[in-house]
Amino acid sequence: MRAALVTLALVAATPLFAQSTPQLPGARDASRITGGTYTVDPGHTLVEWSVNHFGFTPYFGLFGEATGTLTLDPKNPGAAKVDITIPVAKVTTASAGLTDHLLRAGKDGGKPDFFGPSPADARFVSTSVTVDGDEAKIAGNLTLNGVTRPVTLEAELFGAGANPMSKKETVGFTADATIKRSEFGILTAIPVVSDEVELDIVAAFEK
Image 1 (cartoon, helix red, strand yellow):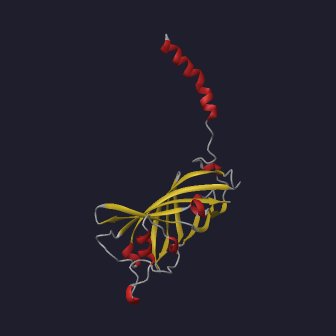
Image 2 (cartoon, helix red, strand yellow):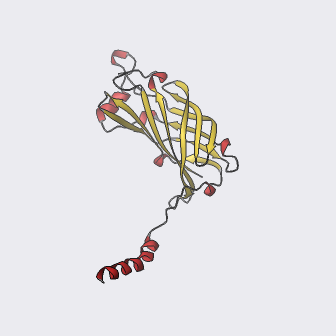
Image 3 (cartoon, one colour):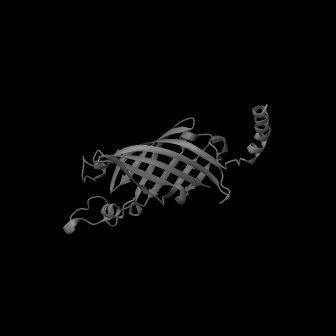
């Protein structure tokens, strides 16, 4: 009898719990996208890079404070264009020593091991977009360390809607890619620190 009463109480309370659950402003729903030109939300756009460190662990860091634009047409999603600039000089890791190593000058006037103290911004400019539902392959040119190479991002819509804080229409995506740093002239410690660099991206755009 007691178990039955507890069950009835839980059933009766279910609508109350459901009513108290807030609805998220963003949803994975492409019909919410009105289209046009959006600008990067720099505070919520991150590029995580990860390398294999000596075969012991993956090690990752972040690029943030990106700028750029995204142009969308819901009636023609394949015509989308993205142009994003990433300030390499603002790279961050969990180790102050490693961050300094990434940005320090070369010894005795030599070439820096990685980016150097005044690295140029990285930039990705799309050349084509192939859409399949909420997913897309974004082909483009990545300029990094003064070298431009083709890179393809595997992207996916994460959410769209009105941001209650900024009152702006917002769309968000996740994306990933793998590049070889040697192709961009960054050769230090290969192969004990992997040539392949995995990129995991979260990007928010506002209109």
